[in-house]
Length: 366
View 1 (cartoon, one colour):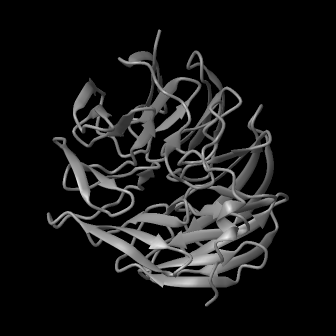
View 2 (view 1 turned 90 degrees about the horizontal axis):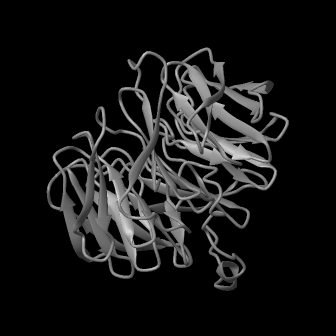
């Protein structure tokens, strides 16, 4: 397999999305879970939005585009809600429940359901523009590479469509569903799954450029920063992959025998990972050494985010935690209506999180 040369990485200008939007599940094409914003302490509840009858959970991260929050819900609807007020703008009934995060791009929203239907709709109205039917459950969030749309599927494939819904290629990731949202950088997409490998794929033709053994299955999105990808695995490890050397640079293992389901958040200094052992770990990005860990009373299923000097994470114990990024100490603990399995989003000075009772909370400063 080929390797990248060092100059390739210098071309990219950064992974952080504009502060106004959170257009994909981890905020930006690098899927690093880091916001360019700093949220004001302490967080205050600004609004709640309840989907359905409160009987269906929200597993997908909310996304934000041009002042609107888009919520994929297990009650079989995509909701569009005002970011400032929490008022519903429209809802679209889908043939089946939604588990994966949508993606927002240039006035359109792209998302899939558990029956394999993948939609493109107008962001302003929810009007369907086109529909593509895959061979299995749409199991990952949506990502974009220039004029192409990417998503993982339960039929063990990564799909690439054009903006008109035509399939350009599909890439097999054998062993199980492709759960992690693919990250994208300079004409390459990065995807991992149940075959314990990180695949580097040329977006132009769907051909594999590299396959790197990572030692465990993963349902998490690879997070890119400065020449390395960081992944949490179901084998109780967090790994850093050096793409230029095509090898694992370091491996962290908590020693507690519980898998990592959530995606990492990666800053210049730290890697933040939430585990099913009820802990949030902060690792040194260069070495993988543990800096601190923070204990909650429930499993960490949803992916944490970083904004400013704080880590924000939901727990299955039904709380939202605000943690000091540098010290690992609790800054705030907020009781929600039920456990959290969804990832979080940050946009326009606000934090969004969904719960198992189908409620989306918006926090910020009044």
